[in-house]
Figure (cartoon, rainbow, N blue to C red):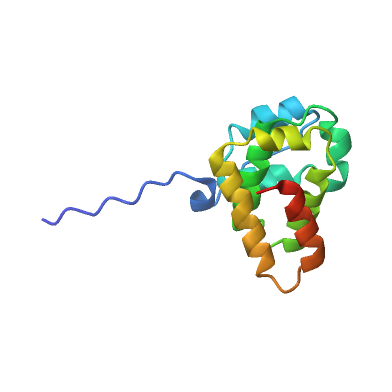
Length: 143
């Protein structure tokens, strides 16, 4: 008798169709703690829970490289930059307004910098994005 092929391992919420319930963080430290446990679509959805217009107040003086890394990873996910260019631009712009942005940016790991570089390249190729505004934001990232 022929052996039945084993089904492929299912490892992500995207593959199982189950959506993890996420709630908006109430502090920058909660954001960091929860973001470390998430990946893929879950991380992208989690980052969306804090509106870019609230970043300056939310992160205040506690923006860290780990926050930027989580946001870079989320923005790099196809469900974010590919589907929501306007929100991606708003997120990038809002980050530049947060206290300690420059310091956190200097401490970013190489992969996070590559994610941001990739995101900017995708936005540059998007004709719906205001390229002049994007160029100004990109300059702030010093990538």
